[in-house]
Amino acid sequence: MKAVGIVAEYNPFHNGHAYHIKMAKEQTGTDTAVCVMSGNFVQRGSPAIAGKWMRTRMALAGGADLVLELPCYFAMNTAEIFAYGGVATLDALGCVDYLCFGAESGDLSVLSKTAQLLKNEPQELSIAIQQRLDAGEGYPCARASALEQICAIPQAVTQQPNNILGIEYLRSLDRLGSAMKPFAVQRYKTNYHDITPCGDIASAAAIRQMMRQGDDICRYLPDKTAQIWDGAQKDGVAPVWAEALGSAVLVCLRSLGAGGLAKINDVAEGLEYRIYDAAMQASSISGAIDAAVSKRYTRARIARIVWSAFLGIQKPPLPVAPAYIRVLGMNSKGKALLAQAKTTATLPVIVKPADYDNQNDALFRLDVLATDLYSLAYANPEKRVGRADYTTSPVVMD
Image 1 (cartoon, rainbow, N blue to C red):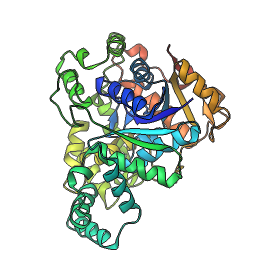
Image 2: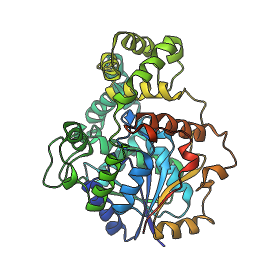
Image 3: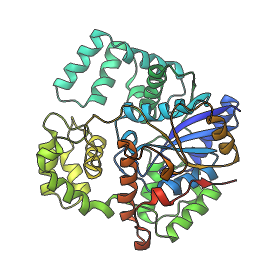
Image 4: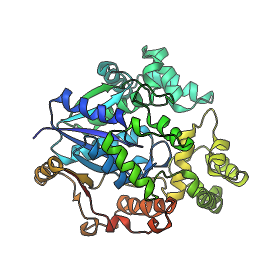
């Protein structure tokens, strides 16, 4: 059995994602797609639009065969750490042959060249990046402009979200010494931040905006996925908006104070004071995040820090690599691959969390807490119960 791996968020799952899975299988000649998916919080710094089991159902209905959870620590982190967590999880399964990712550039060679430059960073490039940082630029912009100036890598390559992740996936493969072969699928019709649909294809950002406006999104989702989404809405468990937890987050930020915020992951250079002052002045979570954003500190970074504070994600030491493989859902092909993984996996495979013999693992406890807090944002009060990680079985679809 040959399998292709994908790292994704599916926030929510849409026609573009179904196209990516289809092309991933076709380009690699495989019939099984393993998706490592962010849990209840996502990399841009927010709660997911729907819970992890609901999005697992949507992914399985849209072409995925096995869905694994990307632990919250990796899902709520920089592109480098996000990518490493996803690739390391796939690699640890021991039976995934290919890694396929979407990218604005379908040219794998330029992404690979950039990854190698960053691995063996020339001194001239390092100096150029530092000069831009000293001038007040944020790291992503500083790196992109320096790569263009020193290495002739266009900023159009290094500043687009999926390209950035693609470069980090390639770096992770190299770091792990993984045998998985990389493939890039060029984004279809729309880009990551596009808010205007093209035919029946719309970006996740556009779809979330349509949800806020109360517009019908069904034409942008595969039919079976649309039915699942409709059921989630009727059950009062989707969509989930950050504002539902906004007051709780502000309580956390104000209670921690600058001293407590200084301990939170990715806080540096006195950023704790900026975020604390913003939280003290703002009346909403979005207001606090917006007030802390600057040329040097992007909105995504501030948002991740704010939600990391809410979840208690502090600076390392936390494990630098996944410690387990968590199964969220599968179909018959996924079951067969899991059976194969019994002899190939290099990490424990968790199907029933109650059976996991290291429940004090910091990454595992964070995943459980993230689910318990996330459920408080459901519109339906009856669904806000805790310990769902122990009472919810993996999704099984055929």
